[in-house]
Image 1 (cartoon, rainbow, N blue to C red):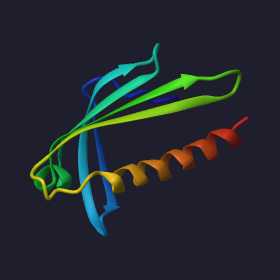
Image 2 (cartoon, rainbow, N blue to C red):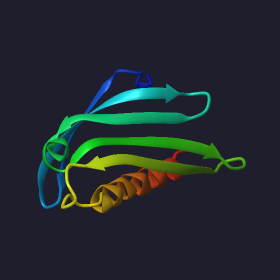
Image 3 (cartoon, rainbow, N blue to C red):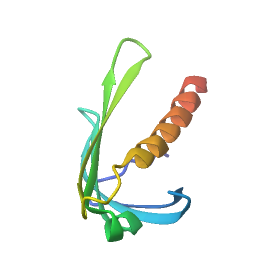
Length: 109
């Protein structure tokens, strides 16, 4: 049975970020299966307490040919202050996850 997240579902993550364990709670705001778009917004977590006022991501899967897709990821964020870092480490973390996912999917037949 495949689980498809629905709008308003909460996603919880505990991960290593910036050299320490951190948590993040996100709410799915859009899950458009027809257009293959998921939009998530962080509602709580370590980065929301000391780095960003808002943090959201949109993931869009664009089919390209028979067995290939392009994934477009967009981030929207507002820093708490000018000293808060750009989210480069979050992008790198996401890239590792997507590379692992792509490797897994390419081996599934």
